[in-house]
Image (tube, rainbow, N blue to C red):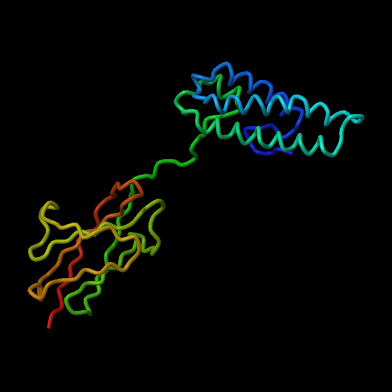
Length: 219
């Protein structure tokens, strides 16, 4: 028995649905962009159904062959209608269309990600030559990113302290620490100033972290 929407699960209700929907699609064939090929196929299948379904319910006329053919036509008609429904532009569907065809508008349960309200804390490991290994946690010490946060933006400035964020360089958004920042030989001994912030799944950023500093370890 059919169990998937938009089709009724009870075959008696499905019979009523077929009758109503086939007539409705025929009436609105152009507006709903139903091709002549599909229109012909739907009507041919429905005509078979119209004959087989009553016979399958009649105890005196029902046979195994009739029931088998009825089920075949039922499934073919359902599959054809699904294809027709999928081809109808969603913008063309009126409220009456949706009610008649049993095509409710899908509602999204996904809410927009909130802009992060906390900031990450950076921790820099300087034990490797010409490289900083950057770890980060949330400001509360948690190693887990805040909910719906994609990653941590990492910005830096080499040399003088940060006085204007326009002077910083964006290194990237790290989804999971550590983040490796490699340097040129000429950067040995220089101080690097880092600021970090969380970025949500829409690319929106939260508040900045305090500046964290580290020296480039050279030969």
